[in-house]
Length: 284
Image 1 (cartoon, rainbow, N blue to C red):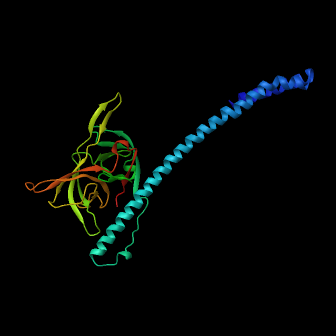
Image 2: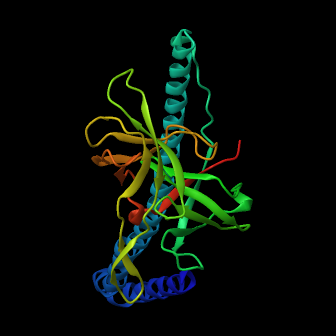
Image 3: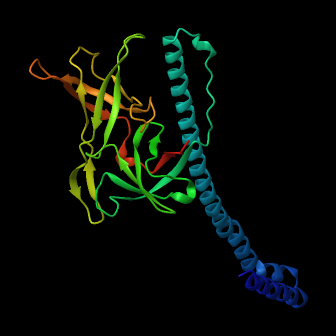
């Protein structure tokens, strides 16, 4: 393309010189005007728009990278805050000065992974395929979260991909706590389980789903705080770290004198249907 433009410019220069010699400078200037104007238009319009398109594409890529970096740092800060709060609580129980507790937490503790497909090979809508695997440091059983809260857990892992099982899957069981109001109110323990995803419509390329509330069961028979109480992971069992936000109690708990336990509906903190990237916890 550059060679053709150079040849055209050379021919224009030769034509301009000939016209200038035989017809005078005014005629020569008018004759080459369309060529000069066309070249100028091409330079100002086409070339600039092409450069702007490439610059815009680069800016979008950089913007996406920075968004992922900001989200990763939010994950690190949130985990540091959770660890600091837990340290302060435990030191308070031991009668130690909570102000002496310090937290050191690396910002590279989470691996950012894009979602490349939904449903996985088994067609389960609660299982997502991620674009990060063994080569990125992902291991089976790793915790997956986003800044808004807990997402799920890693299942099968290949060199370049991994399967994410969402907490909405009915097979998931997570030990959780309800945060009660008041500094010394404590927690109420329960077991969280998913209820799957409900299909609502089908398109040519996919099926649309809605997310029903999660179920929090095995709650002790006692009065608790009003609805919208925060639900966090308890850390029991060693699978999920303590303090990850799961959701909010929707309408209080259900139970009567004939039941030994209570249960309640939990509104997830994460919008699972709009996820594009998630963060996988590195193994300690």
